[in-house]
Length: 163
Image (tube, rainbow, N blue to C red; front, side):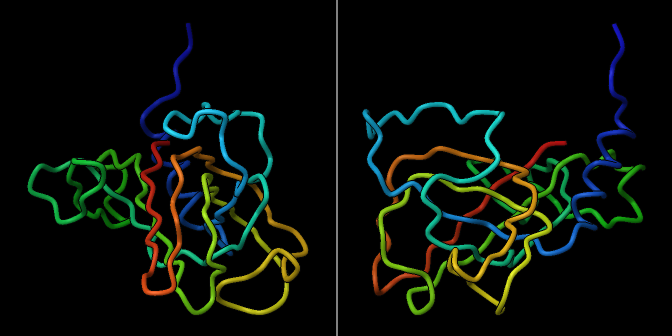
């Protein structure tokens, strides 16, 4: 059976980093039937349900696992890898995060995040759905337990993508 090589996966990670207009969306304000156990996201999805807003990525970093690394995500640590060292380090992961602040992102309870490349529309920074003419390509979708946004906090939404 054929396999995709590590070089292929590194190339895909680099392709993602080179993509323009990368935004994280939050959505799905409607409750899940079981709020403590959301359903698995569909790999055929093309958008986030009930989009609330889109935030530009504050960080998109090529990383590799490293127990002493300075980037922490879900209990594991990672070290940043330069694009020039991507192939020699077999870097097939990208760490991304976006900030949804209290002043510009609507205060809602959300249950879904999506990562888009190639978003277009009007304005800059956090965009409401009406300011987005084309969300671009949905690269990642995650169904989550509810996150309640509050007027006194910034929500940092992060994900680790393995290519």
